[in-house]
Image (tube, rainbow, N blue to C red; front, side):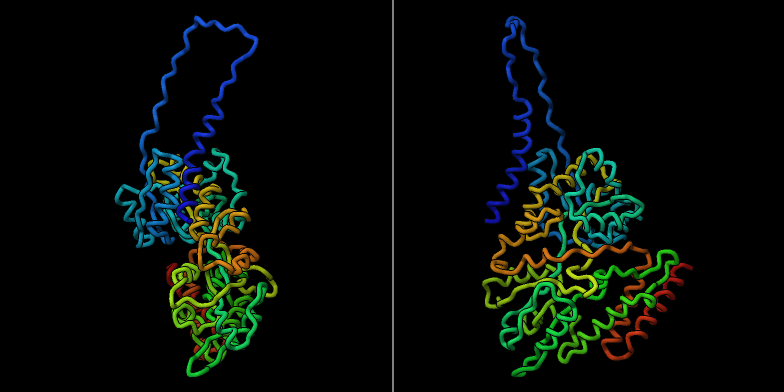
Length: 448
């Protein structure tokens, strides 16, 4: 079914130009006029087809499989622009890999990346500002999800636009209905707060028949902090800015509360998510990203399949129905490529409704604001039949925080301090103060 829809969508893309051309060139003979039939028709030299162009796309940090590239990018491009072929190359070495491409003299035309990498490429001067081409080609940017577009703009900085979204990530609370049924606990509901999620986890966590059941896995503090749009660095001083923000204490208290639940200390561990929820099925809730859906789709119909559903990602009371900041995969135009006009046409095409419907058919969440396309999500995924997938549409993305070159130093020390809190080594206030002090010490050393 998916392949039939894929072929239909690609065929639509390929036929579009021909249909428009036929409509535009339809001539209507004049009536009531004398025509000199002896005048020979003016012969028109047929236009030559465009010369073949091969565009290279660099995969840089963002995940895309070979099949996805061929079906969701290369095939639609070939259908719309037969003279353009696409090739994917992989950069697995971050900035060092980008430097290798620059040194080779053969830098790709397009970059498929994550939003933090927009800033890296900006600083490396490997991306082109899209604003002039957007204006020239009259691209309607309002069609994009506003939070995703804002993320691209914030990470571009200085009024520039170095990327446009291709597909987005979303968050949800995935839960094992069998565990809830076994213990007689009501299922989590849409609109729940973090306090609600905490109370639910407490009701579930226990040991029964020698099996330890955990109430919840929760996504890392770096992601959840974006729900409150908390900056880590003072943009004026470049220093860590944690102690004066009440939000960081709220977050540390939240994570401590989840890990203090008996039998739930490993709430942040990757094994709790991958083994506990999916394999062993002893974790009641996985409060996480949509990557779980791909794993659940693989389990469908196998002996490991289980009775699950999903609901909204928890929100803070002061920001109801607000999830984490928008994240996803973005398309960047290389400033060093040889075919910028053609490459921009590809970016424009991949943001079209037809292609966005295609990627939605294949389990990617659309970057467009069109609700009808969003609601197509999961239509061709067996594991999502009858599931509460509409829950993810009820949350809005939080406002993004402008990046800073010192952010990585601060995050490192936040995670270190949080681990010490979870292990009972220090209290929350001490942890936040130590994280700020350690980050600022490292920032000072790096700036010497």
